[in-house]
Length: 330
Image 1 (cartoon, rainbow, N blue to C red):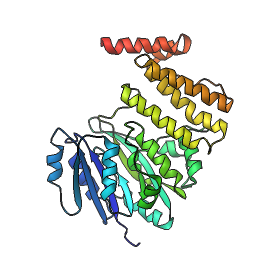
Image 2: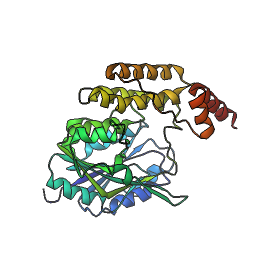
Image 3: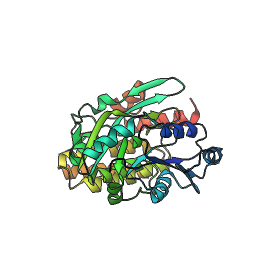
Image 4: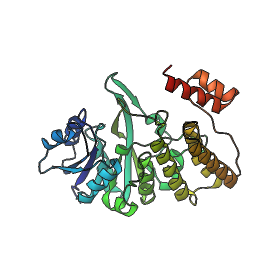
C-alpha cells in the first residue's frame, strides 16, 4: 500500500458561508490520493448549489433530507472507497500537510489510528488558540485504554482533554469493526463514536504537528447547549460510554471519568429540565456507590458572582438566577 486512498467525508447543513473554503482546503491537502465526499443534509440556504459547482470525479456530492451530521457521515461511509477516512466538518479546516503526516506514520504502524493537535480560531477576531499544552501529558504512541484514561480525566491530577473530530485519521477497516455513527445522538456523538474506534485500534499515534483547525465563529459549547435535545443526547452518550468502559477502568478511574460529566449535565439541565437533572444526580450517586468515592465535583456555572452564589449558598439558586437573567434579557 504505497499510496493508499483517503476518503475525506464532509457533512454540510446550511454551510454556505464556509463550505467553499472547506472544500478548497481539502483539495490543498499534500496527500494527493484522495476522494472528497460532501453530504448536503437538507440545507435550506445556498449550500447545495455551491456544492454542485464543485462536483467532479474527485468530489462526490450526496444529498439527503435533514437527519443530522451522524446520518450524513454514515451515508458518506456507505460510498467511501478509501483505505483511510478523514472526517471534516463543513466549517473547519486542516493544515495542508495534516493527512500526509498522519498517513505516513500509520503506514509504519498497522492497525493503529492517529490524531493531531488542534488550533481554535475565530475569523472575526483573528484569534488562534492551540491545545497542544492540553496534550502535553500524551505520548507519541499510546495504548487505547491508557489514552482513554488521559483524555477522559480518569486521574484527577491530569486534566481531561477533548479531541476534535477532524483531528483523527483512521483506517477504514478499524472503522468498520467499530461500527457506524450513532444517529440517535445529536451531541457528543463524536465522543461515543471515537471511543469505539479507539478500543478497536492496536495503538494510537499522537502527532502534534498534524494540525486541525477548529472554527469558533458560530460554535456552541455545553454552557450554551441548554436545549433539551442536546442535553438528552449528552446523557445518552454518557450512558453508552460509561457502560462501555466500566469493565476497563478501576472503580476510582471510573469515578473521575464520569462523575464530573454527569454533574455538568445535571447543573445545565436545571431548572428547565428538572427530570433530566434528577436523573443525572441518580447516575452520580450510582457511580459514587460503585467506586466508594463521595467527593463533590467542582461547580462552575459562569462569572464570579454566580459561582460565588453556587459555592456559598446553593447551586440551584445560582441556576435559577441564570435562568431568570436569560429569559428576562438582563
